[in-house]
Image (tube, rainbow, N blue to C red):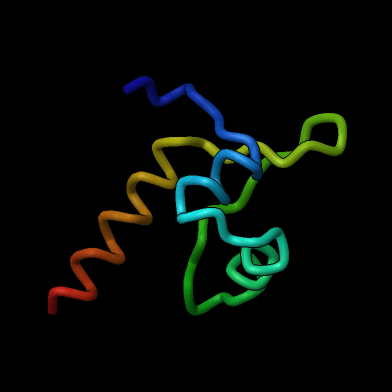
Length: 65
């Protein structure tokens, strides 16, 4: 996978089982989750795919510990 691929908020929500936009907002507001921050382009939130993958990997390791 390319480090330069970006996901829209809709794609990120779908990746996590179709979570609501409110849930995504809560994850972004909860500093303890350390969820990757999006960049904004013309009022669209774009998340770096590699940041999402890395976050998932960290959460998996934490859950296994």
